[in-house]
Length: 435
Image 1 (spheres, one colour):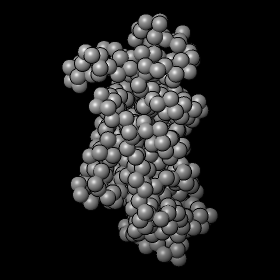
Image 2 (cartoon, rainbow, N blue to C red):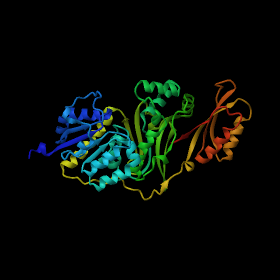
Image 3 (cartoon, rainbow, N blue to C red):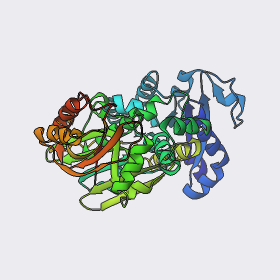
Image 4 (cartoon, helix red, strand yellow):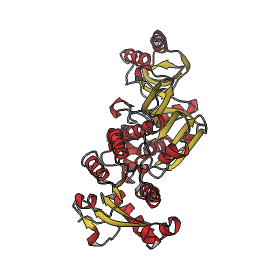
């Protein structure tokens, strides 16, 4: 048999949207390049979508198009199914049926893997087929491969990730241009960086889905996305960004995973980072993941975390990886999850200990600062530094402070009482710090 034909890998793609059209474009335009580099012929056999009337920037023969998902899944000649439908249903059913039919699967579906990943990975293992998902976290950054392969022998201690380009763009714009949150969001929408409904991004939910996948890979811990503490960036003002700078910090929306003895912290929220921290300089729509592990030490992964071609590039990488295994006759799947028996449970947010930035808007009169300090002290919170700024509005003075380490439960209890003081005229802002 001709070697080229022997190494022909047939691909069926389901979901011909933005990312799907990017994958189709790469498979068609770079087929010869991939053949030269890998010795394998990656052939796009079928493309499925429920709406084939939409205009795409890539033209493919009509006989390669179908609305029938089962036609793709049941095709005996297709080796790899690429699922780019998004959402949980029918994406889960598509993947499970494809695995049952002996197909390998590539997906970019972060929500599905964050919610149903454990079951899907078990199905892949039971079916002796691979499921690859590089594009599900941080787009074109090869973070999944780095954790699964490059650092496979490491014990991870922490992961800090800027995992949402929309939020990062907004905070970067507010920092560099001193614009308001609303103005920065409108600018992001006008440039196509934010959706018409940006809730998933600015409320931190998108980052929590990606964090759940990283927790499973790096720490072997299945964490329900509902159990990850999530806080958005919508209450951050450009005043807070400027005040943070004066203290030597930048504000970033971080997805945080930390090993704390036999517990694991998992949270997404605005965070103050020292200006000299590597993540502090990550601006615009870029993503970055900062990892600390016992063998490799500190590592930073940086790049485009979303977008048509960066994400399609990650999908293509997964296709090629599976293609090598098929060509070598290795169809058995390796386990995606390696459970860490040392980690017993997820740490409750109330028990998290960290430092805090606090911004209070108070009436300019004697004794207010003393009252705030007294309430903090009663809840075991000590002040590291404090600045009373000039009036921003008539008789209203911003009081800005940094605390020493304190427990989240204590900080929230103190904040609740401080906000009830008659001298406090606006909702107080509290942002956590990381080193």
